[in-house]
Length: 129
Image (spheres, rainbow, N blue to C red):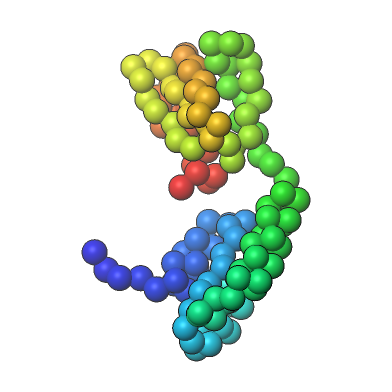
């Protein structure tokens, strides 16, 4: 497996969209301009000071909370449900059913009705890595 640096990884992530929030920590300023070029939210120098880390994480949380949520509509065993995509941690194929596992620990099981597992979860492809 080839080694990859943080800048090239972030460039690859950016190809999928610009919503992922990236913060770098480094012992050198050598890559700071590259980080700026991929729109990183922060570039913290090691050793990282607590106050600077807290400020950067607080700003990240504020931006995260302000962005619009995307939803998926699931016809689960308990009826139709509108679920924020960001709340889905993973999806399982269970026989002819699909199980959506949420951050809260809750599970929603839904019949696939028609189509393959890949077709059912296709709307999530750009949202879940």
